[in-house]
Amino acid sequence: MRERAEALAAVFPRERLDPAVVAWAARLGRARWGLAFSGGADSLALVLLVWALWPGCRRRLVVLHFNHRLRGPAARADAAFCRRVCSQLGLRFVTAAWAGRRTGASEAEAREARLKFLRRYARVLWFGHQRDDVAETMLMRLARGSGAGGLAAPRPVQTFVGGRVHLRPLLRLRHEELTRALRVAGIGWREDATNATGVYQRNRVRRDVLPRWERAAGRDAVAGAARSRELLEEDDAALEGWLDRLRPLDARGRLDLVRLRGAPRAVLRRALHRWVLANPPATVLSRAAFDTLLQQVEAGARTRQSAGRAWFAVSDGRRLFLQAAPRAGRSKPARGRPN
Image 1 (cartoon, rainbow, N blue to C red):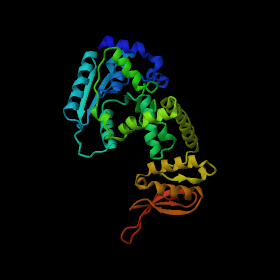
Image 2 (cartoon, helix red, strand yellow; image 1 turned 90 degrees about the horizontal axis):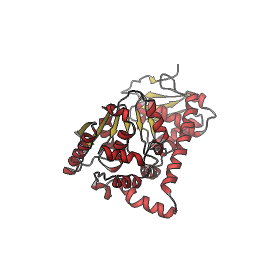
Image 3 (cartoon, helix red, strand yellow; image 1 turned 45 degrees about the vertical axis):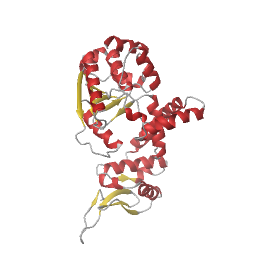
Image 4 (cartoon, rainbow, N blue to C red; image 1 turned 180 degrees about the vertical axis):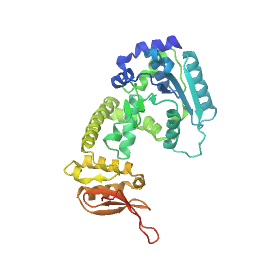
């Protein structure tokens, strides 16, 4: 397997990987790297390439496999395959099964359980997402009305509060390129049988939508989606930077509307999103309720809007803050009410 990994790295040297990821890897110091490994072609290519292209970091690698317990014996065979690969490469391997699995669990729940497992073992996580994943994600998020931030996913470098980093070095490569190179090198991988079904939304988009979209476009639509993703990430970063300079949230979670006057609606929308995240009870706002509140804040109007059973979103025209709903004839002070 080691010789085959070297052969794969000759086809995909660092120059063919995402440059932002390569740059980040160079300055991550002695941090442990966690490699997400399902056993499929993309994640197998990730493990082999990181092993071959960063030989000095091998002792700091931990390969992580999560069994969702949704495919019975096939899932157990995936774990056994991943363990064999890591043994041949001399890499530490950790696996776990989804203890909280339940019938009818959503894709989002399964994803969250896997991410929780991965984050237990490393603050720097590497993923095998490739260019086709970019197009699939964009189509899925367009269907639910995502903005620039959502459409810029998956990002090659994704940073989080607290120093966590997610890295995706394969975003400039297509799935077909990776599988062809694996075959030429004589490297096998595991196929998830559910990928050929319509059980999950991503599988339906991959199987039914993406090929027809490319044929209808008459060009490499996946490359176009990847280019759009890069441009949207630039726009998203610019708007976030603009909002950072305004610093509209104070230490008590109040939104200073005076500082936001004259800012474009896109900046105001982001400020309101930050306010929601800073005041967890307000996260019960529906999309319609959020848009209504945005319109009222933009107009500079005084408003008092329900933010769930226990709270109101209140604006006096200068600040937006949360106010507790009265209980049994007595009132509670507002959260972050201006003095």
